[in-house]
Image 1 (cartoon, rainbow, N blue to C red):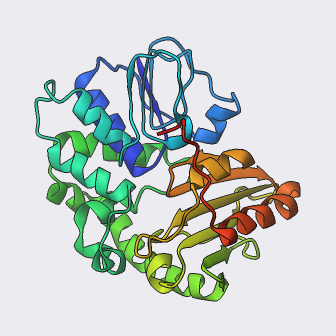
Image 2: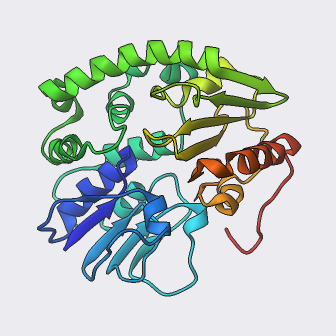
Length: 300
């Protein structure tokens, strides 16, 4: 039996909870949702798929993304909810030997961006939020697995005292300071849409993904554009409703599903060949600027 999930904080906590409740004997298989959608991931019988699009070959599936809803029978649980980890916690609530209630609640809060201005501006004062910000990038399996192991064994205070976690938390705090400058330099606001374009940079910066909402409070939605590979052959676009200005009418996940991506009503992403950028990006921005309701009544 194997856990297959994505390398974000929700995925980390999904893996933590599944290790505690299922007879998992193999390391976590960390994958990106886009690779699942393209059929590039080998899913096998016995796999537990979490926080990712459904694959009929898996044995259990847990997810919460608007665009991943299916109408065929499956084993596991799906619900439009703040986090996939929260769904797993509820599904197995009578089987945990330790109390993971706080971890599940914090994951719900972080993944759904239910944050205060102070949390956005000072994540260093909020332990779970700070830890979540250390889960970034690609090909960092050893660290992701280490955090899963720490969450299974220790309370948050002791986890933050782990030498590697402490080093990464310190780096995140410094990184966020630089990221604020990068956002201010590379973001333009068109009407109610803030657009951050990092394609002019050799290496796109990482940082506090919520910060843009406090820097551009008049915007109702943010768009971040970057190259997703060193050869600049793939473009990644992330879109999110402002967590402080709730006037965006566009269902982001539904919109991005038309461009090879997906996500939630309030946030999502897509990746596509760089040659498609001149067509796709203006179309995405035009939809957001119009700000028309694009809900599909058959999807809850």
